[in-house]
Length: 168
Image (cartoon, rainbow, N blue to C red; front, side, top):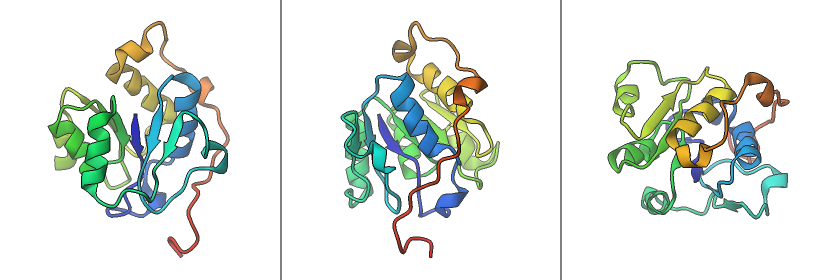
């Protein structure tokens, strides 16, 4: 599963969906996905670095062509609204988009991503919605599982790890 949660080209990191880091932990906890994590301008929490199910490519992809190549080799994508989400929709790659605070219901980009292989959630939607949408995109991964409840997502806030000099 390719995970590219932040797109600094569109909005500042703090304006993205606020549960991305928790989502990565939960993906590892409640699924058997291997995660390929990419992007620029942030880094994985230290305890995820070296996890055998996480491939950290943050800061190592130079172009969107590199990202598209990774996406084409993965079972699916979880990302913010941006070029990768459009690529996934255009290529019918299963994709879950958690929007930043500029994405609004009914706007062009939101409607664009409403294709059969994409699920879109807005900035204010909770962590459990992410997983319930993910189950719908990957029914084989969800076989024998049930819908997750809010109590299962009672996690303390996790601060985004931003390298020095970014956003100063």
